Length: 381
Image (tube, rainbow, N blue to C red; front, side):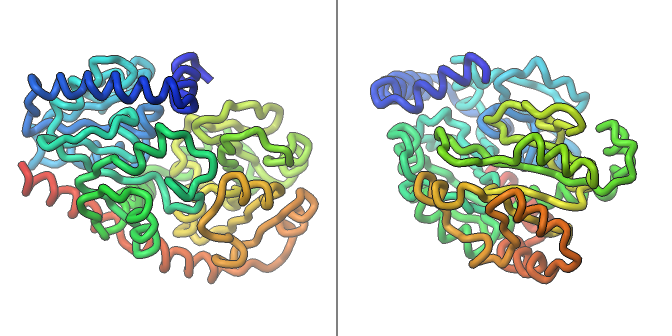
């Protein structure tokens, strides 16, 4: 974990520092608002609060930069470490860790994000349009339902003002109404990230992805995506190195950690923390995760999903969930490594469960979301 992230965590988790940060930076932004007028054709994008160049903001960026209707728009990316991103399609980049970030934010008429873009300072922004694409269907508790949430983050949930928030469907719409009560309008047209699936299928082959990852084996690919706990767990939370090595006898095992986690897997395991999740989906035959909502997006592929939840009771008490994956969704869940091995070796799998999940929680096409986003930008310009 980098020094900047440690400082951010200190601020978030301290009532004193969090309160001081809220007051100081909030006042700074209000002063800036007196002097800065937005560029009506400038859009600022940020993914996972500046940690990545990925997900829906990236999809929106690539869609708009290739659309003649937006050729005269200034498209700006905000990143914690802009210098490490050298992709040829990237144009203007700014640092989201710099005090000047708020200048670029206020200068941009439109903000496109999949988490916080305002650095947890939920200020009023009458001249700017905040467009929120959340980073998944809410499986884990959020906002007031999340146990042990810091005051600063809770204050952000309660007061952040999204002008438009895109939702997958009825389920997350109802959850987000509770979590983000200040949202002005919910856009019920699905998530733009579904277009990532379509675009990759049309432009990238599985063979190319395997080549980039150095995969030469013909063994089926198992993708392991554990989520971040956010507390010191008393119980086992992840698969052990020994079990991953055992699985590698049958599968090509790829480990992709949460963006707050640090890669520690070695040996025969391929670590792909910074590799596109959707490219990994293309070559994955089996997905294993725990309490991550990643399976909602993977279910559209119709390939096997297993959940490993050895800390089921502790997680429910200390973090909280909205849905029980086994009882509410019908997914196979293992509570021990031995039980997981048994599930993986079974001859039968209920693929109808995956179709039902996609239909109930992720039924809209990516094009619906794309059309809705363009309509917002064009009609408000």
